[in-house]
Amino acid sequence: MQVNVRIEAGGSSLGSPSGHPLPTLTPHVKIFDGDIEQILLSSEDIQGKIAETGEQLTRDYAGRDLLLVGVLKGAFVFMADLSRHINLPLEFDFMAVSSYGAATQTSGVVRILKDLDHEIIGRHVLVVEDIVDSGLTLSYLLKNLRTRKPASLEVCALMQKTGVQRVPLDIKYKLFEIPSVFVVGYGLDFAERFRNVPYVGTLRPEVYRDAVS
Ligand code: PRP
Image (cartoon, rainbow, N blue to C red; front, side, top):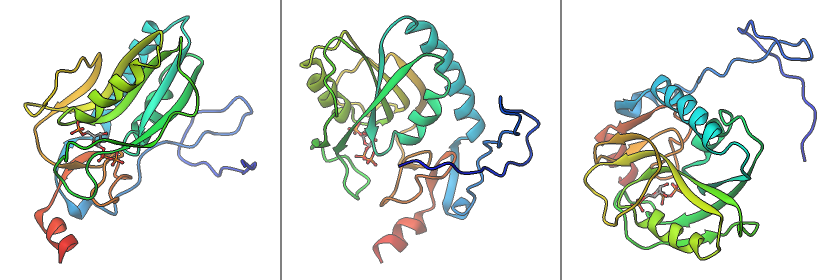
C-alpha cells in the first residue's frame, strides 16, 4: 500500500505543478566505488542514451498499446529510468528467469521463476533486458512469448557483449556494446550485490577472492 509522504527536496530549481521544488535525481551511491576496477559506462553515458532511446520509442510506439516486459532482476533499474523517458501511456509486467545462479559463467539453462501476470495476445510487447551475453535467456524468452500471439514483439537491451552470442537474435533497440567481461552495477549483480551502483563497471579481482574465502 502506498502512503502519502512529504519529500524534503534540495538542490533543484525546478518546480512541481503544486509549487513544491522537485528533488534532484543525481546518483548518490558511492559505497562500492572501492570495489570497482574500471568504469565501462558512466552514469552520464547511460542516462544520455536512455533519453535518446526513450524519444525513439515514443515516436515508434505512438498510438500503440505498449507493454514493457522487464526481465528480473537485472532490468529493474534500466526499465524504471527508460520508462520515464517514454512519453506515452504504457503498462508494465515482469518475468523472472534464472540463467547464472551465483557464478559468473552462463549455464545455458533457463528456468521461468515468475511468469507474466497478464495475457499478451494482441499487445505491443517490448522486452526490456539489462544485458545480452550468450543470448540464451533472450532467445528462450522470445520463443516463449511469441507463442502467446502478441501484436508485436521487440527487444530493448541496455548492453550486449560482443563476440559471445551463441544464438542469432534480432535486438531492435540496443544502447551499448561492451567487451566480454563480467560487469556489475545499474541493476547487475555479483552474488546479489552491486545492483544499486549507478554506473556499469568491472570488479577488482580481490572482490571475487573475498567472496569465496
Ligand atoms: C542476466 C541478465 C540476462 C541474462 C543474460 O541475468 O539479466 O537475463 O543473464 O545472459 P545470457 O544472454 O547469457 O542468457 P541473471 O541470470 O544474472 O539474473 P538476474 O538478472 O536476476 O541477476
